[in-house]
Length: 542
Image 1 (tube, rainbow, N blue to C red):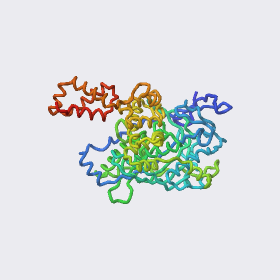
Image 2 (cartoon, rainbow, N blue to C red):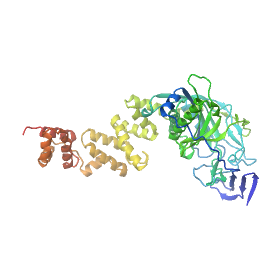
Image 3 (cartoon, rainbow, N blue to C red):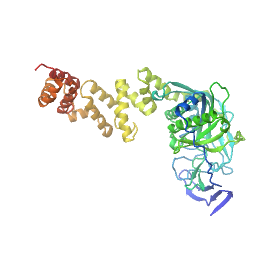
Image 4 (spheres, helix red, strand yellow):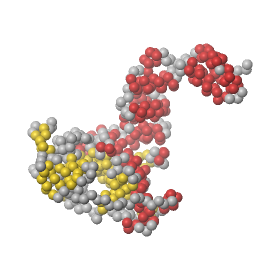
């Protein structure tokens, strides 16, 4: 049974569900939206097959202007204006209430955690806070917006005029960048359309309706796809450090809309702006931007600049191109006006100070601290990328472990193990204390580096202590010169042909003999002492 309210939209008979968060039963509304027609507009396939060298020459004459609008979904226990929870992947239309679906008479109540998160992010972005702000109604019609308007902030956002510092990886060109932040404002999310395989209709899931968002708008300071992707990556890192969002792009917790225009070098006026959506990874963002820059530059070069129109395009991963989603005839008139059902938002200096004091060490601060330790930028970026990795590193060196050796172990064998097992540093059974013990045991000569690796992988997988494992398995390094000399003599006696070749000039065979001695000692011979004795024996006069 269904009821057609508008052409193409059908509301189906409501079903009753018992919600654990409410005493009474709620009605779950199922809605499908039928497409009036399947659009099959042919899209520009992308930049013509130009000579790569010629394309590079053309690109040098133009400058790209890039700005990003980022929506960050906040990790609050309940939604922005009601007590409904939000769980990614929940059964459609089960985490909703009269406020979520915009039923008449339902009044919103602001979640105080939304303000707290907004202030945290604004302070971390070096913004100027608005001590008094308000919410506004942004009015537009779309099937996933049940109220017919979105509660947002218009002319008085929570914060304005900040900046974000970041470091570009060395392999991508390196260098420090600072990108301006225009504004940060609070708003609620809309629902989600679930498109069917044959695209004849779409289903509406309102679980996400009312989930709190922060929209962070950058200044148009970026010039390349790499800069834009690194900016977005740094924002993700920042909100994760602050604990206000998980920042997972694949779940929609971090969504970026990129605005791009190009202009001839030296021109002050901006070109026609094009928006790109459907960017679900940083690598796809970089590729989409580089493609769009090339597309626009080639049209300008061919005298077809008027074909660049203000529109929204989406990135098609399969075709590695941007395609038109919808044209923009002009600026949208959202008919903003102050939200009458919510009071203004006022914050005090004491409130702001308490939040400022609670901020953790942020990625930029951490990178500068690690730099002062003498670490390379590659090391710094690896360690500061994940707050949990940075915490593990800091705890290890706090126990007295060598900074560079700790970095090498974490970037090498520990990182390789986590990647292979597809786990995070919180999932391994190695503790910072035991990593420090391992580094100390190798440095003092108690065990060899080879034995150290074996111990490391076993502890990461099963747990245990370094000292306990060394004693239990008898892994103490052999440092007695006489014992090592006996093993060297045996290896030399067992390999007369190789000895003759070595003394005939093939000195690289020393590595072969060292390997045989290590095998004889079961990896326990001290490498430095072994090589010294081996060199003396092989070069002794017969």
